[in-house]
Length: 114
Length: 116
Image 1 (spheres, rainbow over the protein chains, first blue to last red):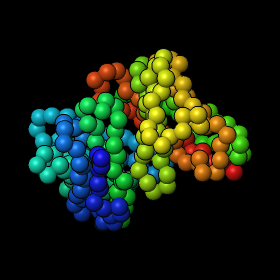
Image 2: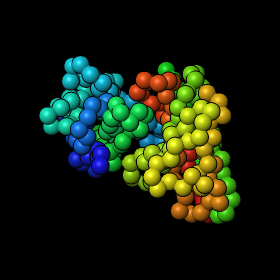
Image 3: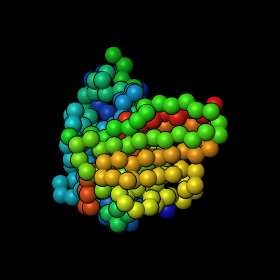
């Protein structure tokens, strides 16, 4: 069965620290990959996506992610976080042959302290 | 950007009653909409896929008679929770895509349902 695994459920870090959130998936075919963010009380927003091409993708708000096909991973990074990055982050996988059916990871709650 | 709205944003109902949640694409036509359920501190679980003008496709384990989905137009899908029970209390989120081959989903703000 397909699955999406996020390594950390809860991360606490200080402002200006670097952030890396792990995401691994299990699926043998071609996938599209996404990171979504959910700020407190708000709806899901797309941070970045990978469809094809350069495996290092840049998203909004200074986030980037690297797709490593051999490791089935799509880790999210930000060099220097801000208090406003406090949110829940979801990795999501869309197998290209399961049209539209996103599979979400469990999410990682990130808390950035001033 | 593409905007998806949901109404209501929160609703409280008594056990045994039915509740309808609306999902609208405001500035684009959505050939397909998705309904998710999110439990506290958990991920989103896909409930069903709704295509305009056809019956919804439900995921395994989702009761189609309990969660009625209607996608009557290209901008509106509704989810009706029938004979709601406290265990149906959850956060319901819809998303929409503009057309075939559009892999990016646009999410609504969600509806918090509490069944007393």
